[in-house]
Amino acid sequence: MIFSPEKLKERREALSLTQTDVILELYKSFGKKLSRQTLANWESGVTFIDAETLAFLALLYKKSVGYFFVKEHNQTRKETLCLKDAKKTNLVL
Image 1 (tube, rainbow, N blue to C red):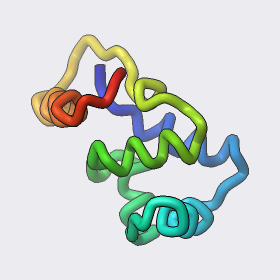
Image 2 (image 1 turned 180 degrees about the vertical axis):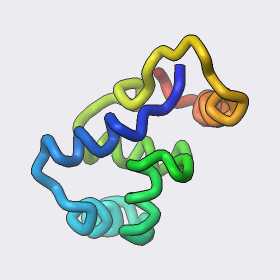
Image 3 (image 1 turned 90 degrees about the vertical axis):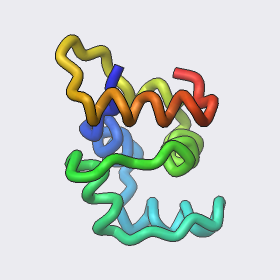
């Protein structure tokens, strides 16, 4: 399974939230600071989201962490490492 940046963006848009809305809510609810550009990079797949922030977003978006992962037959090494990092933090997929 690999992280799906498309699902991250789709869920935010389904909730009618802007990137700025998400950033403000992450700070307000969890004390997590990040830039709009960082969120944009995660949603476009430019960079990988860390496991802790993904867990916060899952709570904010009212979805399980596993919702943001998809089965993929041709995983790259980088995608596999990202999944292993998520498992190390005991996030249930």
